[in-house]
Length: 198
Image (cartoon, rainbow, N blue to C red; front, side, top):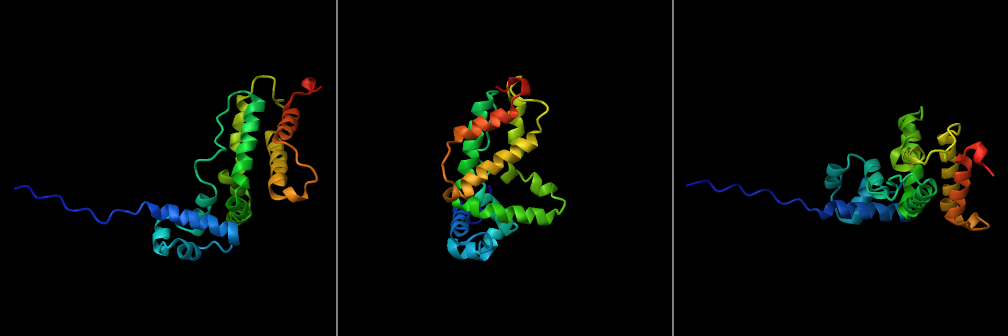
């Protein structure tokens, strides 16, 4: 007679990760980056700290996943239409970073990565926050003649992020609200070859 297969152990609770991530997002929004600890997430979510550590080696990894999930509106596939791609990229960036958890997490995560690599290589290309590679891909895919090869894409990206962050972080301080289309227009003008500028 064949031996019956051994019963598997207790099935893994697929809701643990979701509960921990939701608690981390709530804590980030309510109490900020420093207060979002593994112990605080465990207390809020009802998930034991050891179960959280099995999924995320540190609070940094937990906060990163909670605030900046892998599936993001920033995953813009370039179409070659520069204005359309810029518009989608900017809208995606604003959507991601307007979330309260992301706004609370971003400065702390950047500081952590800057401290982890004082030369700044990690923080400068920190993919969950920077999105610099996605911006470069948009410029590479743009129709010929729409991007001046003499323009440094990193300079333009830095200016773009400055405009976006001002919009996100200090909306009350802005005297006027400008539509995203104005940012698209300004960035497209910065990128346009000199002989094409009106």
